[in-house]
Amino acid sequence: MKNFNALLLLFVALFCTVTFTSCLGDDEDDEKSCYDELQRLSQIANEKAQALSTNMTTANCNAFKEAAINFYNKAKECGDKNMIESAERSKAMTEALDCSDL
Image (cartoon, rainbow, N blue to C red; front, side, top):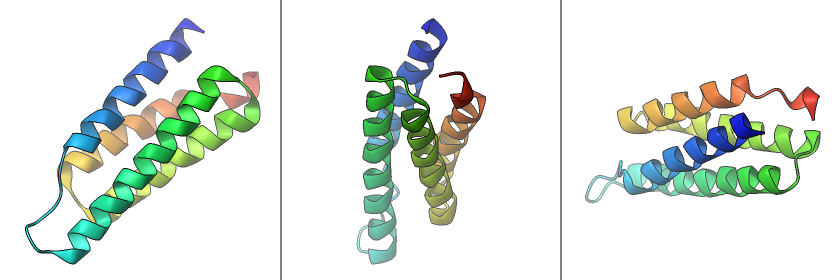
């Protein structure tokens, strides 16, 4: 449980970092759209992480992992270096999380 709490705290910190990291250009609609989608996926992953910390079930764990992977895939699609690095760290953390033990 301590490992999960540490993992959750690190995951939330990474998403907070992503929220304050901008991949926006001044007037580039595609980048704005990409950034908006990354923010939305970040929020979803945070909600799933909170649900998992409140109610540690296999379903919540899998939902959390799926949300993190969706964020990772979108970050790669957007191509922003900072976003990709944050997403890779969060993906590595979720891959280490074993949902079958819950």
